[in-house]
Image (cartoon, rainbow, N blue to C red; front, side, top):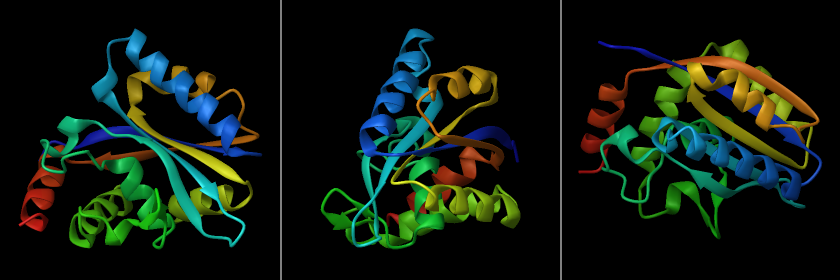
Length: 176
């Protein structure tokens, strides 16, 4: 089983606009390096009712072999693991056309690739802000991703180990 090591960056922001600005910087960084398929990212916003909503996301389409259509990757899986009732757009993630089983499989890979302490620390960090940016990238880009998240009030970085082949197989079997 070939295990890939990714770096997860979590940035805590005072508002969604600052998180989105850094999201664009991370996106531009990967476009310039011609590595658009080498990262996943999600901007989350804590709503007035305390619930979490994914307001923007970029997922590597090859991460699950295109099985997921519009794409759901490790960043979204991590959001689901940290905030099980997160919403995307206007609906709950589990209620989307992708189905809860695919999201569950991706969340499982995100959780399995990190220690419980690391997951807890990332979740607690995100609880401290109004918005957050989660970026799952290849380790070669780690320092550049960190610099691109310049508006973050707080940043955490953790390793995530995942087998892309297993992710694809689980997504295919969960998708029917």
